[in-house]
Image 1 (cartoon, rainbow, N blue to C red):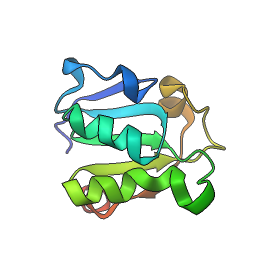
Image 2 (cartoon, rainbow, N blue to C red):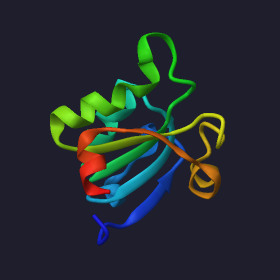
Image 3 (cartoon, rainbow, N blue to C red):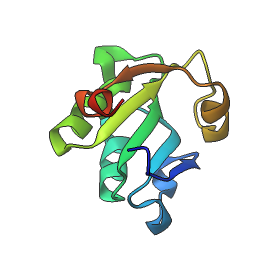
Image 4 (cartoon, rainbow, N blue to C red):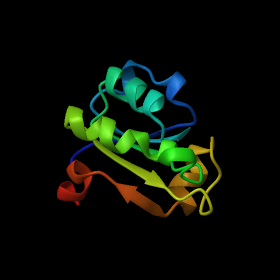
Length: 106
């Protein structure tokens, strides 16, 4: 994935055609709906905020959703960068969880 373009987007609801085939650091929480939006936008990989993981691990829903689709997904620890702020996630974020697709890509 080293040849992929890495972009930032504060919200999965703001993903556009220009994000297609890119790795996107996205400020949204790591739930299923943002993962759905990332997949619909054609992202190669999505890095989302784990939002403190949440009830029933809802903040990590993107991992399994992406895995089923073959899309790399990872989360940034909520205590390492602000949720909703993709640039902060890029600057200070620490990966907290990743699906197998992402792990295999390194």
